[in-house]
Image (cartoon, rainbow, N blue to C red; front, side):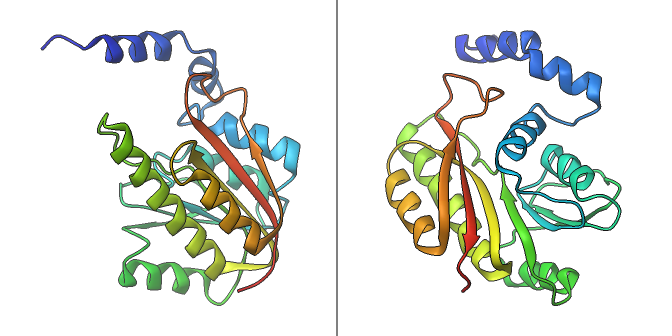
Length: 207
């Protein structure tokens, strides 16, 4: 089957992408690792000994970074619908975190502890229909915010991928209602033509 122009362009970009090459050299599972590293360098979200919850974690690029940042005394609890190969220091729960059974598993794993940081690099399966894709991405990030508000400790932080478009401004407003400081970041490792940005929220006000 012939590849479309857009998939050829993606393949070409991917093969020539310096962050893809760097990820292979550094042993990271995806180029997305550098987005979290860059955000963390700027915003100092993940500290040693912290408890981090990673939503939509597969293939594990963000969990790898988080586990290194929290160190041996910290914890990373990760969840995704997709399977994820084991990472040292990461407790993984497979399933949809919005389903009660999976949510209960995550809460049981946290065992009464509240998270210092909730991170989410989730994307929907892209259909190519912009309106539908935007709606799906906003739905996911709203679910991530809802989860963050249930598991974060007061003054905790939240970082999530958001696509600019319909619903973006309303979402930022909703995040501002729950956190003291909200910033929008566009890491260098995020492709320039992508509409993705990262919302960094600090100072959770408590549920």
